[in-house]
Length: 238
Image 1 (cartoon, rainbow, N blue to C red):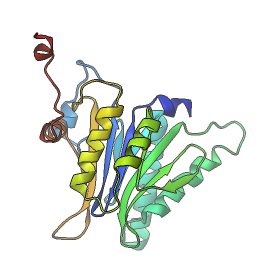
Image 2 (cartoon, rainbow, N blue to C red):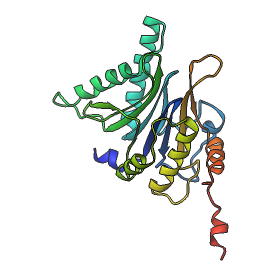
Image 3 (tube, helix red, strand yellow):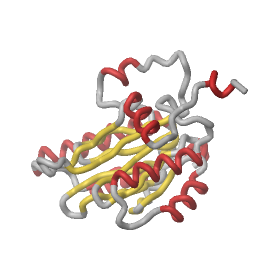
Image 4 (cartoon, rainbow, N blue to C red):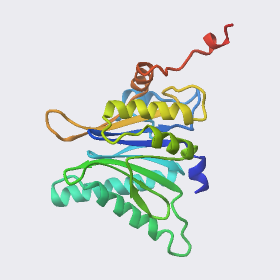
């Protein structure tokens, strides 16, 4: 739990037509090679937000090595379900499978619990868009908007004030950026500090469409909402 409370903030907001996830990256630096993030893969740095299945994305806070192991386990479970039933796994079922594994690691001697909390954002035809949170004990709960990681108390109180039931994805994106700008430890928001993802329905196929933003797209999004990173030089001028 200590590792989670010091980890970068991960924020999730459920909208009527999608789910929004945002995460604060702690591993930053000018010498980091981010060329793969910019050109290959599906976006994201592979540190905080992961694509689990076509219909599920997740954000992690805590020990990232533990998170990698759990994400791989979740991906395998989702593919087994797809292979057996020819449909995407229901979001709550995937959450339960992962929580069963996490609970087992609290029960037996010689094992330590996974030091990571997860936010699952997903869609299935049974309950439409859903947002779940699970902790290292194996407990999970459904949320309309929630936050894990550092400064989660401040973020939760802001979300309580600002969240409305019939919120759209566009409004949810604006809310997430507003809350992140007020709760992140860093003074400036930019793609090197922030990961961003949305899960919506494709207008044509009505299938869930996960989008994990690339660094340039994150910067463009922040600029659109008027919270772009300021140049250090301009800040220094009187």
